[in-house]
Image (cartoon, rainbow over the protein chains, first blue to last red):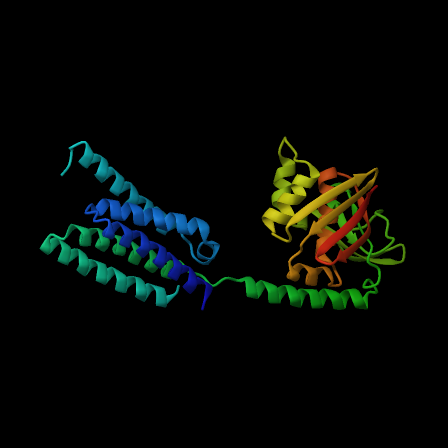
Amino acid sequence: MDALDRSLLLLGSAYLTAVATLALTGDRRPDIYVSVSALTYFIYVSLDETLRRSSKLAPINLLVLTIFISAVVYRALTLFGWYG
Amino acid sequence: MNYKYIIIGIDIIFASTAAIAIALYNGYESLLGVGFSLLVLGVIISGIGLTSVEPLDRFFRDITELNTKIIGKVLEDTGLLYAPGVRTCLNGADSVVIHGGGVGCGSVRPGLGVYEGRVYLAIPLSAVPPTNVAEALDSENIPALDELLRDALLRTYALGRDVTVTRSGREIKVALHDLRPEVIGLIKSPLNPLKIVLASLVSKVLRREVIVVSDDVLGEDYVIEMRVL
């Protein structure tokens, strides 16, 4: 198996484990799912050198970071009662 | 670009979009979260597919082997193969590291040449890697020799597991422990690049000329002894 194949398979497994755990706990907040997904991605990327070496991750990181910040802002707005 | 990952990513995006649509239509909030998560995963995998590049490790290894063979042939033809002395010469902009036994600094110039009837190969000191050491030396707080060697050989190049530096008078002994097998292969090549790099590095850090007294591979360790001139 190619090194990048293995890396993506592990990323997918880590990702699905996190999401499945949230689903099993019965969490119904979509922003929490998105936040946990983004964090899983960042933690995995920081551990896997193959993934960092094989791709230019800067634009993907920027996009995932934007999604994560949006999810956090949405949660904050909801908590303060300014949205939703 | 890797089309396999792009297609997998797009498939996941389609599946997640369907999941989101179903969740919105039926009011399944958990499925909505899973759908959004999968959407992010699809985007990540597509992005990796779009930006992935094949690693060039294999290419560089083959090119290094080719260069080693070419240099080995040149050294053999010029009689330098059996004159393994390495020393550095600090002549300002013309600072070089010389491969060729018994050659004094005098008017040695970079390149392949003859001085006092002896053939030498002189490499400009500024061209010898690693370059990040030059930046460290230009700074106001110059790190200690062993810290610089550790940074260059272990953190930058990951050649082995540890470096020990022993100084006694004008003698400096550098031991690089648990070398990687590929590095041991390079050390045994006619123009030992590690010997050149270490002599240059020590010379640059101390701002003194050095001459390599001996070097040896002991199991998985490489030990080089230099004398500061």
